[in-house]
Length: 241
Ligand code: GLP
Image (cartoon, rainbow, N blue to C red; front, side):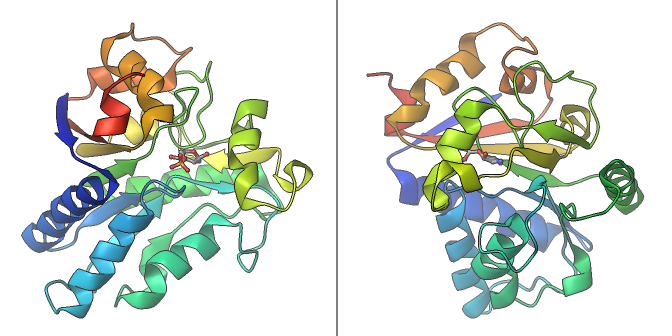
């Protein structure tokens, strides 16, 4: 794993943006694995700015997001589909058919998971997968205890995760208790992974990810076994208080 320590959130976002831009420019049909949460927000802003400057086109880009809440429609401002449209897709020339997120409103969720997994496989390898880091070490919505070989599946969200994400909702009761997430096995098949970590509240989790043992009790520790991981972390995340 390569760890790049940057000054602050903006620099982390700029660095991540430039890795994605390089990938898009180098490949004829780039496939991006995208993440939500607060961490990548600025990276998406920088990508939009690069597009507006005419530096990049998303015409040939295909994207697969990591996860989606169960039970929220795509019009719900808290759904990850809504987030992606608002934060990136509506502002660049990516074709809507090229953007993929699990459908958390599917009638048959198990079938939806199999279909999503199949779509990722058919597309070929994700070239660059962006990841954030949950406080309990979750990646996507793979909570502690998820098998490393897991594929796209339905998860029961941990109380700590629901509490951490309650800030986006009116109350914790509105935070869905389930989600669909790409599995750890699915994520690990990406050619390259960039993990973004910002702020001192993530410092403990980052320390554990880099120095701790590889264990399913701390899902992000699996990244130690991937051949091409770049961790971009700011000063707050790199130094435990
Ligand atoms: C959320 C998402 C993850 C995200 C993580 C960190 O629950 N499902 O994909 O990476 O938690 O979120 P944040 O960036 O807001 O700290």
